[in-house]
Length: 291
Image 1 (cartoon, rainbow, N blue to C red):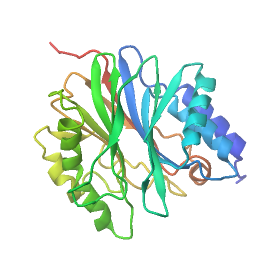
Image 2 (spheres, rainbow, N blue to C red; image 1 turned 180 degrees about the vertical axis):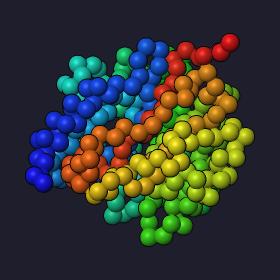
Image 3 (cartoon, rainbow, N blue to C red; image 1 turned 90 degrees about the vertical axis):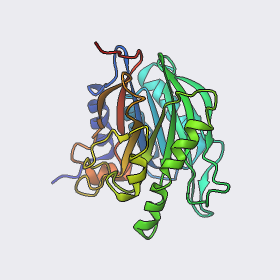
Image 4 (cartoon, one colour; image 1 turned 180 degrees about the horizontal axis):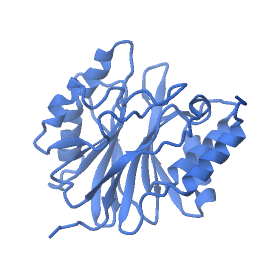
């Protein structure tokens, strides 16, 4: 089989994304995407920016993980503007988190005609909480029409042992409660959505307490949906978007999923773009009160 070129991959992605617009009318899309070392030196750095922009342009708001260089988010935002002819903005965490050898930023990119940033982000404070996170979750508040919510981003440790990932998963209850009760103290109906790369599936026992929360937390992404890209196919169910079922009644349309842009070019896509697929949910801008 003839090896596909990087230019051909980019062209395929752009062609694919032209027909893959999700949110329209009175609905909006919220996504999460691990962009795999965005900003690191690479022979395909420009192709990566162009490919990511083509993918991200399908959404209204996206939270991204593995941002290694702040300037790369600015480049990505400018590429989004160039490709779509629409104004895009970004919000990035004020500093990188992680270990001494490996640190990354969290960032959001959003269409300004459909999304407003209401409140800049904060990191989940680990003081007196055991310092259980390699990278503390980060959350900011947004508005889409009448829908207001706090969107928290997570990139859990992979580590040498699964137990390290599970320990972080077990803390999601505290993360959710802090962003609901402390980040937005004056709003008793604060809706908190948590998205990211958790490095374990949502059916793992680590999330059992979180999914039993009184707000009825649910993962919008089907539990067996594979979201990571191996060399010959999709492999693991690591990316999730958790939301409070009761509080989202009338807001959440029930539409969710992944955006698979690989076109079976798994090995090449991993090399140029990312080893993850974006996951998304769709919400109403006006609450659907039903009959």
